[in-house]
Length: 411
Image 1: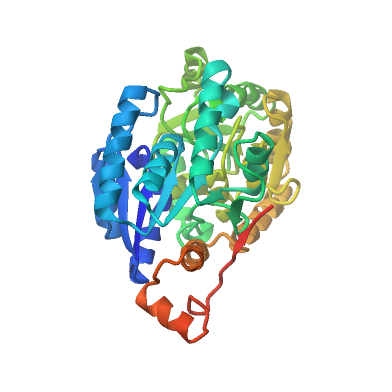
Image 2: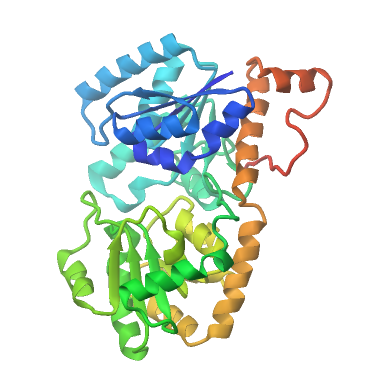
């Protein structure tokens, strides 16, 4: 069996890490298709997959897009994958159409979030149309979280009943052994020492792109109050500025001037930084299923997020963290101050978050869900199975060896 993952830009493939290698171990040949870049080649090499580079632009150009579409049709006819799994809007649009034109037996489109939610006018209309075409062209649609599935249906970009969420959501789960707070205390101490944060100081954390959609301005406004009312607190922010969705330069300048704010940019190894935090905040305008909140919960951190689709799937309000209204800096400040002042509640929410992360988001379990989905859907589409799965099917046994798994849920 041959499967081709397609994304607009190679960076998105990071969210699929460990899945291609897992599929290969079960007899599925994986190809990664994305725009050219060293990241595409390196991820493919690490995962034991083939790489195909096709330039795809996130903007819209009829001429360029038609040229790319023709090229994709040729590639798919040559490669003859059994399954195409497309991610992100532009790849979703072009690759699902190309897959249909090339006669690919099974085309899957996965919604990771809805970009049009924070746009307006012509751009919003174009983005909604893009999603609608991709979900219509695909044979199956996966959605990264239950609340985004509901919203996609309500916004009429996905036909009711066609979409599914695997388990409770997430694209790749979390490595619970790697994100174990008890094993990272030395790293946390080193981070605090390097940044000049006292060992006993409470730290508000943020991990993500420094982008307007991530609510950075709201976090900065909330921090202005937090720093006054809790003089010992620090703010630790990981992530690089986003050129395509910039934060007001004045906001970033205020943060940069604050001696208790630590802007450390993108960090390839985030775990010791999580371990140095006391609470994790993500006041986003929109999300799919925020990986950072899942990782924070796995690290035993209480989480504070905006009550918007995607985020509300990753924060159990009052159990693993707190949800606050979007674009409400005062409410965000109140939530953060309440947790900074109450270490017992912080610990209780963090422990509940760790249990929640263990309850269905282990990376190994998530990999099995995707594998089971591919095999089961292949049977429905009449696609020959890999040898081991075919033998089990012939014997009337489960397609996979017994292991923790979850089937797709539909609304």
